[in-house]
Every structure is written in C-alpha cells, then in structure tokens.
Length: 246
Image (cartoon, rainbow, N blue to C red; front, side):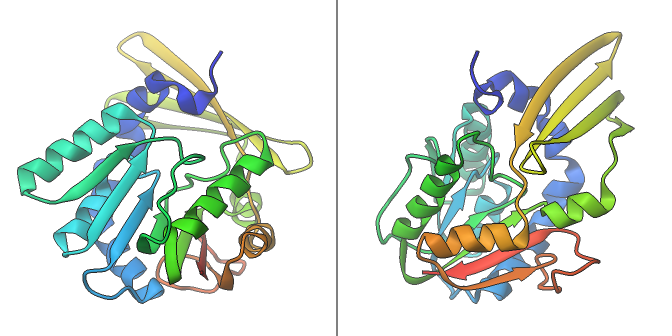
C-alpha cells in the first residue's frame, strides 16, 4: 500500500477541510508577513514547496513576483493553474516529489508552509528535501519553514477532538509515539450517513531539531519565531516558523 501522502483520495476528500474559506482568505496577510520576515525584494523569484492549491503562489504572483509552485497532487495543481489562467497570472506549477525537485541557483526565496514537512519515515528524506532547497536557492537566498512545533504540540495536545465542517462532523485522534519522534493521526468524516476514515503520520520537529537540520545542510543565520509575524518562539508561540539563509 502506498504511503498516506501518495494517496490522492486523502488530499481530495480533505481539501475543503484543510483549505477552508478562512485559510484562503488569510493568504494575503501571510504573504505580507513572509515578505517582511524574509526581506524579499520586489520582483524576486519564489519557490513555493508543497504549494497545494496555490493560495500563496497565486498571491505572490499577484504582487509581481516570479513564482514556481511544486506539489505532488495533481488535482491541487489543476485548480491552481485554472485560477492563475483566470486571473492572467504567470505561475509555473510543477507536479513532482519534493525529494527530487531541484533547480540549482534559481530562486531568491523558498517557502514551505502549513506543516508540509516531516512526512517521510526515513529522516534522510527530510534531509534530502532541505538540501534540494539549499541548492535551488541563489547565494544569500532565504528559506522559511512554517510548521507545528513539537513544543507547541506538547502545550496544546488533545488526544481527541471533534467539530462540524460544512455539514459534516469531523473526528480527530492523535497519538505521540517513538519517544516524541513521530505522530500518528486518524481523521474521520461523517456526512450524509457515510463515513470516510484516513490515517496520516509525520515527524514533529522542535526548534532546536529543525535548526540543526538546516545547519547541517549548509544554512546560516537560522532564527525561530512563534508565527509569521515574527513573534518570539516561546511558551505562547502559535507555530514554529524557522527562517534561514544560504
């Protein structure tokens, strides 16, 4: 059986849940914060790694940046391309595994947002992704990873949750395993008398762990923040946002 992240049915079933109206509407403010945090110059070239349906890629393009969005999920890329065409935006969307995509010395900045890192069971695959980004950046290029840090997860952890979403009831179950090096998750959607269940897992990183990984791959000037606005990464942090430079 293929890994969960290679199952198109997962990404299709949960698309409206993961990319809700609120999240789509938040993209412009997030892009503004990213530009400020990374000090991106007008017209710079941007790599959006794991771009999904392109909410950030499209927003960068609206502001005149040169954008390449990479994702493995065809239905997301088709939606992104259609929206770019509708708006007359020039964005290059590429269907490829992040472990293999590399375009040497091509980008001024790279972004990896919304906990799109740590999916692979072999930690060397995470390292491969980081090295690909390093080689794809121009000298001095900036890289930002936005994820749910291990410290944040520990503070707000709930084993089970449920809520309503667009007429469906969504059940979530989480389990910490392997000495906090892995998390297993189960999502169940109940709608119109039917149920859909999927399991996914990932490797949560602490600020120290992801900073060490970036450093080992050659990145410098590594700094952790608690959100895209640049708040401190402390006991009140909402996310783990790590900025680094080639």
